[in-house]
Length: 535
Image (cartoon, rainbow, N blue to C red; front, side):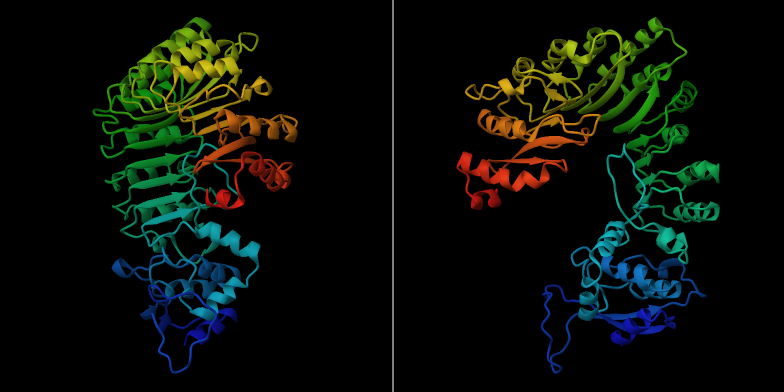
């Protein structure tokens, strides 16, 4: 029966409703090409699966969940007709433990090896799209050509438009805990269908969307929240998502909010007027204008906020004096959030020493990411305040510090003395790296990662391969190591793994020389190839 199903699906004919018996691998059955003897009984026979006709869509508890292995969906999407796609999805609901054996389709060994002989590029593309689907608990939808630059948790999944015959109500079930929709390609009816189905998912805890709901259904979002009593995490990255803040403020279960757009005073005022606003909030990722930042941050200082990503946007309605006062008051409000363990801060400075002074009160801060932009382009650069920045960091128990600054060796030595517990350091330029004294003790005793940008606007690396190799030898002796950092698109790096420091480079001009240099580096440090692999 399995053979007939494979043949009919490949021939693009419709599978009539009925009961078929699929074979799934046993718990510890090895994947091998050896054929079994005919007399040997098959292992892992799955229970009969009912294939439902498209004319009679399932409902209630019998509604199917998209719960099939990635490679099998590759076969469905890549070769089948629309009727085949529907029939195969309904037929392949049942299989043994997809999380552990996601590469094993329910159609047996022959189907598995057929999938393995597919075109590599096509198979990888589809597997990447649908690999996030997991046993019906999480559903993620992502268009393959969509990019989300500010996202902290990029997830990949299947985009429902690839299977237009399946309505959203068949994907979204009553036990769904996570739903991600990161593309704006849906039509009006599809959006209505998705949110109508989500209202039935009362167990939903994580919701990530990235298209304009109000473009088609202005009242969809507030009505949706009323049906999600367990929602903990909400993320919307499109430009008008700041309007959702008042609706999220009144949800007692919400703990993590990430919004796009810029919060204006009217929206913030509306949200803060709600009694008990953000009472259990632990993480917030926003961009807010200076005219609204102070009131919002002062309210957050009365909560148990632990992680804050905030961009203080310039308000052109304020004068320079008003803007400076608003900036200082906003930073004072941030300094009053004593429970913060992570702070990602970006703002335009006028008087940087006075503006950074309130942040010395953050005695629980472990991770600090600072992005500075001068309010006046003719004024002092951020590097001119390196002494003040190091003095600020001296008061904080930091383990990770990231910035867009240029440091020289003297400033880094001061930073090492100010932050002896620092494990991760990322910055833009090391100004005098050539003059690094390898005979001196390590500047950062506990440092595990250090990242230096190698990006330049003309698309050529700032540092040559020869300099990188020289610095690699010096840094390996001196102690600090380098690794990558997502803030910088091009980087050079060392990474400490098991006591072995590895050099690598993320640039098309350098990758070809990585293996050659690793041999030189191993011989220089006395590290054998065996130890390097083990490390």
